Amino acid sequence: MVSNDFIRQMEGYGLTTAQILYRMPDHPTFLQTYIWQEYDLAPRFPVLIDFLDFWKRELAGPLHSVTVTHAQLIRPAEFRAIEGEINIH
Image 1: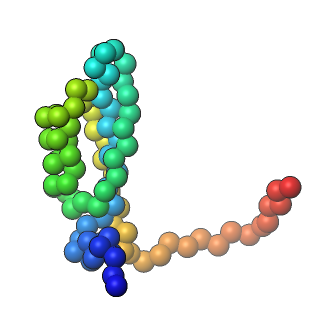
Image 2 (image 1 turned 60 degrees about the vertical axis):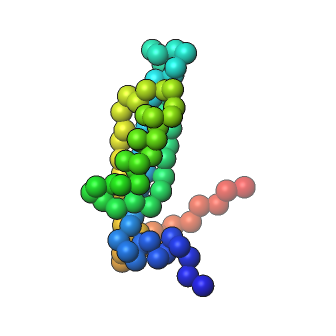
Image 3 (image 1 turned 90 degrees about the horizontal axis):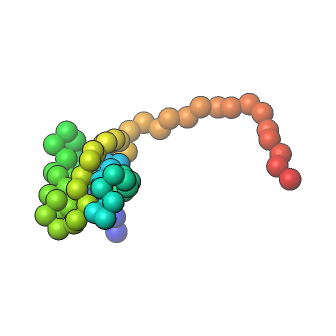
């Protein structure tokens, strides 16, 4: 049985993280942070766009800014050997 996440990665989806800053409805001078993470297709990000449309339509906190990062997870492994040992008691 193959996981749905693995199938999505094989279809080109990558892990997308969005840091969403929004204004508090009761205190509009304050900004609050919300972290959203899902598999999505770069560079159009249809899943994220659908979520932001839902946010604007259903939630009271107006958006201030959205910062997006995206990583294709299926790629050659990154490995770096480190010499040394740290003992913590």
